Length: 434
Figure 1: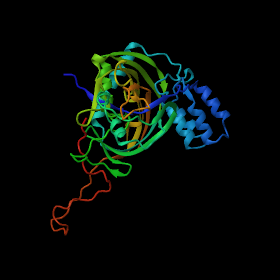
Figure 2 (figure 1 turned 90 degrees about the horizontal axis):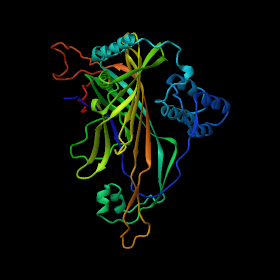
Figure 3 (figure 1 turned 135 degrees about the vertical axis):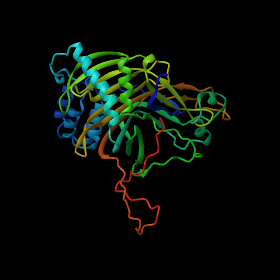
Figure 4 (figure 1 turned 30 degrees about the vertical axis):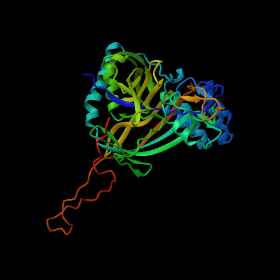
């Protein structure tokens, strides 16, 4: 039986509004060299003005993390740094500028096979021996679709309509909904989260979110839709295992050499057809019955894998989905970057950054404004495309260890007292459901 891993979850929440759709935003395309020239010419501009200018651009080449960090250091404030970050995030699946690719001869087929064999060994031998860790995971989320209502005090019937499926809508009549405007806009920050995550015995568990301890919701708690966008899972190991296992049975071609933080990386391109894929995409949410329904599919995908040719360690991985046109989502792509982390005097390879980009049409209901006695003409729908970009940084790594004290039998402490610990995460986390 083929083993399927739940890697990405795409959440789409329906919005039902009378709508006027504006023309799509036209981004100005730019190379990395043109971006750097623009930033140099913009020296002295305000943070807000520079952020606005960056929001009008679309890169045609990949802005590497190393180059991004150098450029961000020269910017005047948070707004322009965020605008450059999301501009970089949207370029992570492009090719590097030709000038950044080392002019080295491609390895012969035998050497390529040996490098990929080292990568397979790394996944099967090194990853299972990774130490248990605690890490901070900080995510910034951006969105480029704007739905604006001219009346925020919607009637109760309309609030109910906003949670119903199209089929349910067709069976009932509701008063006209407040006028709305749907438009594309430059990507804007829509939220940030800060989480403390444990990776222990192959399971990723969120222990703290924004300073509050994460606990299981009561069984009778109302079910609410999760936030939009992809929630990537498995970057500490399971994601790598899935992709490498899929690649071993799929088509893999030599890409190029690439300069990493500590040496030259071997980059391979791969293409996994749907019948060999274990990349599981879940799309949420569709109402109906009890709770929120989820669409799920194993999709074909392609991308790049950049490895250390000496050790086989994976240092960059991209996944671009090839989702069929008739599906309720059209994009669920992931970049994961890895780097050395020193813990207890030893060096390990752990995630340093990830980018997820999701895309889905959002159903927006078009309804006549003039309704007599709450009886309106049949509803029509437009489906503007919504793109959500999430940028995640992993830092503050610590070894996950439980500390104990052995007390003498005549100790004054009552029997059954549990020892204290210097780390709040020392209690064994609950097992994460896939």
